Length: 123
Image (cartoon, rainbow, N blue to C red; front, side, top):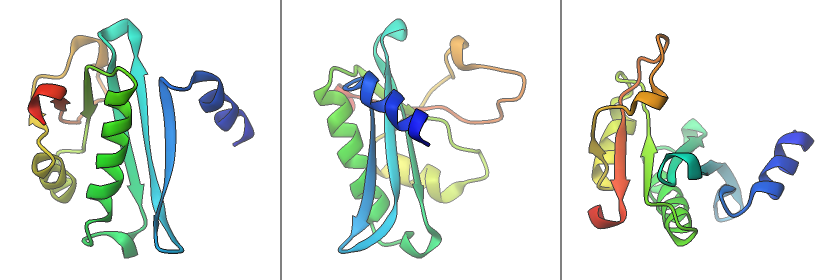
C-alpha cells in the first residue's frame, strides 16, 4: 500500500485518488490516471461499499474525479465496466458517458468490458 501511495504522490497531477465519505462514514474511493501517451485520456475507477450504493454517492464521487481530471488537462475520461454490471452502466450514461469502440491499445484477449468515454464537449 505504501508503494502504491508513493506512486500516486509522485505522479500527481496525472494520477489521483480520492476517498469518498458520506458525512463521517467512509463509503469508498475514486481514482483517475491521465495517459499522456494516448491523447491525455484518463482511466477512471470507483469502488463503493454496498451500503453506499443507490444514494447518489457514486455520482458525486465520480463527478468530482471527472472535474479534477479535466482540470489537470485530461482530454477525455473513460471507464470499462463489465457488460453485466447494469447499475454501473446506467450511472455512466446518466453522467453523460457515451459507449464507443474500445481503443486498440486497451484491447486484450481477456477483456470482456465495454468502453464508455466522456469528453469535455460531452458535459
